Picture 1 (cartoon, one colour):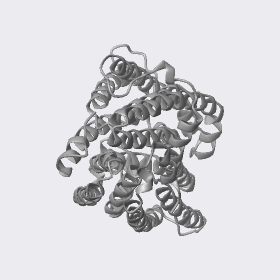
Picture 2: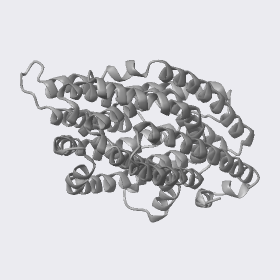
Picture 3: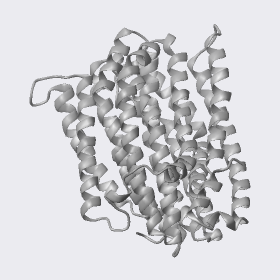
Picture 4: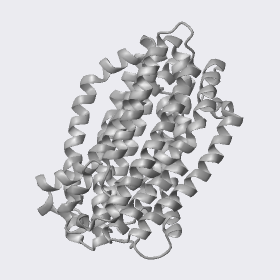
Length: 462
C-alpha cells in the first residue's frame, strides 16, 4: 500500500495520474485499433461498430458500481489503517463481479439484435453491430473481474500493475486485430467479427495476468476463500457508493443512444462520423480523466484519515491541472479536427461530419473537466449521489430538445452538438455547487469517520 496521507499533494497526484493516463491510452487503443481496421470495411461497418460500442457504456455503468464502491471503501479503509475491512470489501467485490458477468452474458445475447435493429441506420449497419457484439460479449463480461482487482489496487495507491497488464493486452490486441479482421499472414478475413474476437482474447489474457499478480505479489489485499461468500452488509456498502456513478454511465448510454436515434435519418455516414468523432474525443480526454481518477484515491485516503485540508488541496490541484489540459485540447480540436478523423476514414462525408462534431463539442471541454474532477471528489468522500443528479439533469435538458429538434424541417447536425455544449455547461455548474455544499458538510461532520459502517451515511443525497 502507498500512504497518500503524507507528502506533497501535487507529487502524489502526478505519480498516480501518469500511470493511469498511460493505461487509459492503451485501453483506448483497444478501440482505436479496431476502428482503424474496421474502417477499411466501409461506412456500415464503422457505424455498426460505433453503435455496438455504445453498449460498452451500459457495461461500464455496472463496472463503475463495482469499481467506484470498491476503490472508495478500500481507500478510506487504508486511510484508517483498517486492513481487515479492505480485504472484506475486495473479496465481496469479486463475488459481485461474477454475478455481473453472468447477467451481462445472458442480457447481451438476448437483447443485442433488438438493440441494433432500432439504432442502426440500415440493415447492414445493424448486422455489423450484432456480429461484433456477439464475439465481444465474453470480453465485456470478464471486464468485471478486471475492474474489481484494478480498483482495489487503486484504492491502496498502487496503479502500476494494472497499467502493465493493460499495456501488454493492448499490444496483444493490436497484433491480433489485423490478423483476424484483415487476414494478415493467414489470408482468412473475419471482418468485424475478428475485432470482437481479438478484444475478447486480449481481455482473457489480462484477467489471467491480474489473478497471477494477486496470488503471487499483492500483500495488502488478496483473494481469501473464507471471505468469498455473499455478505449483504458489504454488498450494501459497495452498492451505496457505487450505484450513483453506475447510474451516470447508464445515462451516458442513454445520451449516446438518443444521438444515434436522432441522427439515423442522416444515414450511415453521419452515424459513422459521430462514432469516429466520439471515439477520438474519448481518446484525447484521457490525460484529463487520469487526473480526476487519481484525485479520488488521494482525497479518499485523506478523507479516511480526517485530513480535511489535504482533501481540499487535492481538489484545487486537480482542478487547476485539469483545466489547463482541457484548454490545450480545445485548441487542438478547434484548429484541425479533420486530421484526427481522417486517420480512421477516407470518406469525405464521414470526415466532414466527424470534424464538425469535434469542432463544436470541444467548446465544452473545460466544463467536462470540471465534471470529471467533481465526480472524483464525490467518490472520495463516499457521497456519489450529487454527481448522478447532475448527470440526470443533463440528460433531461439534452434529450427533450434533441428529440424536438429532430422533428423540425430545418434540423441539422450542428444544432444537436450546440445543444450538448449548453447542457454540459449546466451540468458543470450544478456539480461544482453541489460539491461545495458536500465538502462543507463533510468537513464539519466527524461522525462519518467513526466506523466502517458509517460509510453508508456518507451516501445520503444532499
